[in-house]
Length: 369
Ligand code: ZN
Image 1 (cartoon, rainbow, N blue to C red):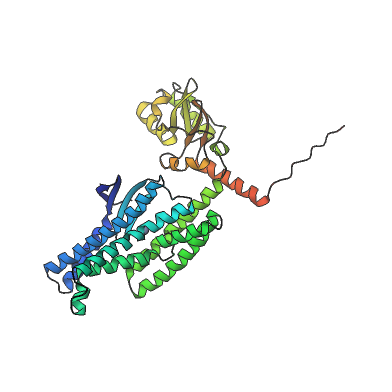
Image 2: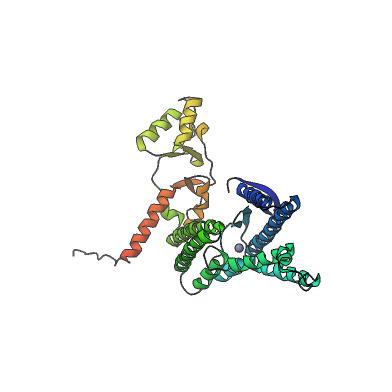
């Protein structure tokens, strides 16, 4: 996430803090000050927020460490004013596993609540006579209250919040995964609208959460739809197999001419049939400017992607597009095709149409005899 800083590393997961989180601390500090609090009050308010977010980190670690048990890594955990976000590499597609990963977060807050409650009982805070306002001001009692509300809030079935993921997992054990996601997303968006309206009357923080739920739910629904559309397709199915390539020592000028004449934006470079890399249009212009017309083609290579095998599932190419929008398809060290987001999109569109039309009956061949 942009505007966030690393503040540590737990169990191999980077812990980050978002710039807006500091605004939350400032806001909490200032509101304590303006409500007539002394330096001690301000400090205690800030300490409270830090303790609360420590519980949030433990909550996110609950998700991350459970996911790790199912072989899913977590890139990082970022603290935002609306809570923590653990970026898992993927979500388990097995509904049982997703249920466990989703439930592990709130389960951590249940555990913290039990510990806090036990501590409050043992220390006698709950049992000794105290007036209500002193009791409400108690640091540990407030921490217990927010942990309980974290459990309750997270279990609202508003996908992609934890309760929504639990709901999707339960639905997915009955209907197809993408249908389960659609239902969970619609319910989630319904809750987001309610939350947004409630936010106007009670707490602006709810509006932020509603916006988050709305947008992330939509993004996840699209991702699931894309995955469903790619089911059964291989890289070979979506690859561009007719393209031009150049030899490593060919002059830059002729590469430019080729690109101009064919309209091909990405020109692969080979050496004796072995794939070396790709020259993108932007690489080409820069190289022409710096190295001149006569420079050999290989000096303009801007990308040396690993390449992807033609028999890999098509969905494997999606994360690769993050580094480059053109991926070479390599078979026995030979370049046999290129995959781009556009070629993938076209193949999926074709697939969808075929499904709508239904399987075609085999055409009859008439043999003139
Ligand atoms: Zn959670």
